[in-house]
Length: 93
View 1 (cartoon, rainbow, N blue to C red):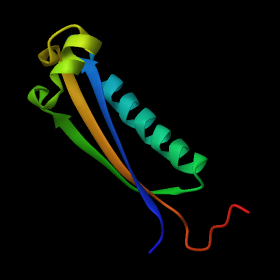
View 2 (cartoon, one colour):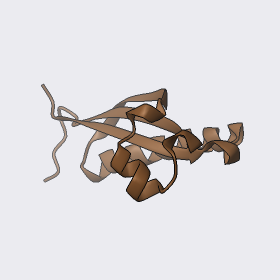
View 3 (cartoon, rainbow, N blue to C red):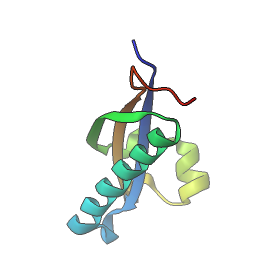
């Protein structure tokens, strides 16, 4: 079985300032960042998933208090996952 690496991103976006166009751009940017991260490790993004919204109660209280400095409920929490895989024939040498 080829080497794989799981990728995950959770992105907070302010509810009052987030539009449908912003969300489409966010999805594109996160997918592109996954592809670049995979390529930097000589891997290929083989699975990609927009997991939708994460409930604010699933956010760490430390993140809410120390990073955001405002309630997690002020944000829409978007979650994305992916799998990066090494090609069976790939060699970086």
